Every structure is written in structure tokens, then in C-alpha cells.
Length: 446
Image (tube, rainbow, N blue to C red; front, side, top):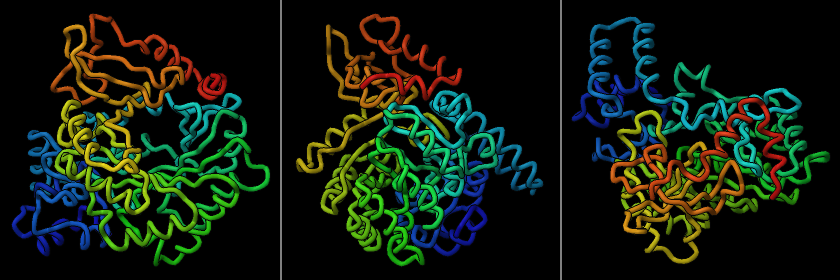
């Protein structure tokens, strides 16, 4: 496993043309972790620093503003104590919105007045669970919107729980909940016996009958496909997936693929085959990231390959407003054009994908296009998922802004004072902060 301390070794071995010092400075602020599969099989070192996998796996100097980069490099040059370096890093991180979309204040549910740690319940039908043993990944993505969990600020940013019974009890009390999403970090860093301890109570006798789908959000098929082929507990992992399917529920594997190269590796394709043989369904999703996949041809190739391998193309996300978003984000107008151009080159079997989608505080907001309406150029937007289910499917309009990269950058069109959902959103968030989230979501009729 390679971390920031391995940068000089990696660069000396693979990329002597790069100065490691600025990369070491960036890795003081942003987390870095990569394994032999990423370092040896995915990164094209001959094309660094432009190589998309290099950009994806190793913190880039430009992720820091010029002043912050110079400050950190100067501190390293002076060989300041580790505690001083950590303090400088913390000061920089605080400016980078380490906790986007108000997840900690608006999404954490309660049961009988007690807060449910390690859970989020933003949408009526879906509960998110963050297992304590899944708080890291096989490798870290430099754009990750949960980057703060992997730094020293993690103690105040991390969601985690090791209480599988509490998860089962909460879902049992919420008959509107139809699926649970295990996320992290990455739940697939866990050994089979730990994963089973969380999943088995949800599919065995006494499990909530209204729970139809168990989802697993994971980058493991890209970062470490051997989890499902040659690791010591690979067969046990696949056996867990089979048990879910045999219980009459769906095992939906939410695979994070950022670039076609991750799918092209033979190990990844064999892992995909093994998972599909269990009866599980694999869906592909990723954000649109500048320097990595901001090309319609890249997405077209990736979605077509996913369809060929039996993966359902699911979502193209917009990079969230956190961390080094200034380095990674793509303007919404360009994001829509990239999506549309890629979509036009897909067969019908791959046109299951939706996007570009902003996972903002009110919900998942899709960009349908840019149009001229009543003499005004506007973004056409639509809720694909929402805190209030009555918003789902609603189309609304925002003033066109060529520089906008996130929902908060947009203003209502046609002289409106606010977007249609804002009054209700304020009401909902107030109730959630008061601890009424679960009961509130459960009371909203389908």
C-alpha cells in the first residue's frame, strides 16, 4: 500500500521528470492511498501528469490554491514538526467545505428520540448505513466528496456504526423504506464475516419484510477487483451476495467507474462476471471530473463497455462543492453538452443512464438542457429524487449562467424570488434538525 510517504519512491521509479515536492505538499492536505493494482496496472506513468488515472489517484499540486501550496511547501522545506504541518493542513481544509450538502445536520435520523449514528435518511425509501469497519477504501479518489473522512478532521466528519441490530430495528420501524445502501468509505474493504454480520440480519427470519433491495456502493471493482476473484474470502463474499438474492431480495452493486481503463483490465472483467453469476445486478455511476473524464468520447466508451459487460449505466454526477472543486468541477452547461453528446452514441440498452445530476441538499437535481423560454435563456432542471417525494419529476427553470457549477450558483428564472421547493425545504430541514426526520419521512404517503 502506498501513501504520501511513498511519493519520492514512486516518482523516482516511474516519473523522474516530475518534481515530487509539490505533490508531497498536496498530499499533506488531501488523503492519498493507492495499491499495486492502481500503481502498476492502471496509471500510465509515461503520460504523467496528464494521465487520468494519475490525476485520479495522486493529489495534484493545483488542488491547492497558489498561496496555500507555497505555504505548505515552505513548511516542508523548513522541516517543521508533524504537528505544525497538521495545523497548517487543518487551516487549509477548513476553507474547502469539508462537509457538503449539510449531511450531518439534515440527514441523521432518530428512533424513539435517539439519534441513529452511522445512518442517513434523506429520501423516504432509502436508508444509508456507514459501517465502522468500512471507513476507508482500497485506494482514494482525489475528487472524493467524502475526502474529509480520511484526514485528521475525520473524527468530527465521519459517519459510522457497528450496530447492525440498530439498523434492522430502524428499518423495521419505517415501512416506507424499500432499500438500504451500505456506503463509506467503501464497505467492500471489510472481510466477509464482518459484511455478513450486517447483511444477514436484514435477510434472515425476523428481517423487515418491506426491505426489497440491499445496495452496496463500492469502488472495489475498479481499485481492487481481486476482492471477488483471488482474495482469501472471495468465495465467501460471493456467497453473501447469493444469500441476498435467494432471500427474494435484490443485491444491487453500485459500482464507481470513473474511466474506461478501470473496466478494460481483465481482472475487473472477471470480477464483474463472478458478481453477476450470484444474481446480483451491477450499476455504474461516477461524477464528471475535469482532467479525468471531461470528454463525451470517454463517457460514451465507458457506458458502451458497461452495457457489453452486463452493467447497467446509472448516473453521471456533477462534482460536489467540496474539497478541490475549483480544480475538478465542470460548468453545468458544458456538463450537459458532454452528457448529451455521449448519450447520442449509445444503444438503447445503455440509455438507462441519467445525468448530469447534482446531489444537493434538496435532492438529486438533473440538468435537462439549456433553452430559450419567454425570451430568456434558462437551464431546464428536474428532480430525480427529493426530500419531499412530491417534488420528484417536477421541472423548473434557472437563469442561464455559463460559469455555474452547482445548484447554489443558480438563481430562479422569470423574476421569481425563489425556486418552488425552497419554502417547503426550509420547513423540512427545520423539522429534521429537531429530530423528526424518520417520522416525517415515514408519514409522507407514496
